[in-house]
Image (cartoon, rainbow, N blue to C red):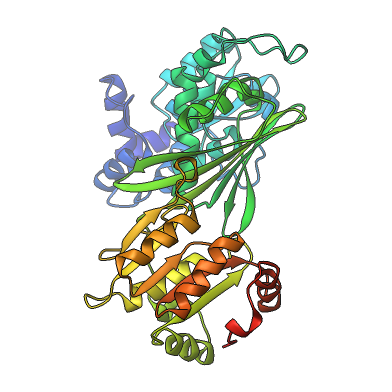
Length: 440
């Protein structure tokens, strides 16, 4: 350390006293910034200021990690749970010394633990805490600390060469680390407002992707996660009330979770693939906030026409478009617009995606025999003014919906088609006469 700077720096004198009193081990750069403001007349105001000052005083390097690409092979040498807990990010090996990014220069217990476990010579490199956290999530992947706790002595064994052999997947799926990992993936996807989670098995990796704003985005995961693929899939099956022993046939299930006082309905689809079972989970936020009619992004001409259609006393309003185009959100917004105390509105959906006060909503349950057609037939005996049918899938539902519209009800529904012409074609194939439709 530079003796001149130490003798002229009030903050350095304060640090020396705290080191002697063993009071610095728990103080990070943010805490030192407060000391710096008091000890240097306010010249050190931010974490970056303090870290740069510490780097000069102690002869260390400072980095923003913008031009540093962490060595993935080097990362695999260190336990992820320690790296995450202590906010330490190994960067590179130079001249037999491993540089480790940290913002906690005086909290040495993390570096000491890594030295003891690996036997490597480590040198701290100072970097902002926020930058380290962001890079760690990117490099180590979601659930790295959880997967790391399983270790090599996991309580199960997966034998890929002999798929007929029994494995204790039920026990493995209930392992606390697997449970935490699956929960963390779900929470991460919900926080990022993803609409789907894809778990895709390949020969040497298990890829996880989130669909965000219609685009699939890769999620960084620990390299060793492939070993735990069967247990992760089994955990999802258990949550979905599916048969974990069935690995040759597709299965569909449902999970309902509560997170931060909001409910999320998760539709689960499991399909056997070449290298294991692939899982896709559709996230449906049941109490998501509805937008107003004017916030749907329609041009004035389309908006005026749609608003005029909502005032008609009877008929059928079809909203069509590809998956994820906003059909259901558009219809819910329309229902919310006309929802008042003088009209009875009933919906039948699979599943109920939004809960609206004052509207009677029925979830489809095909396993129990409650289909769209059967539910719609029963709805007509409840004296509704407006009806929402989540989707028309078959001829029976289409015919009942058309008859309801012709007998004084306003029916809202969706059809999976890319344009109006395709809708007419689908209904004609279902036996619905073309004169029943009016194009708006």
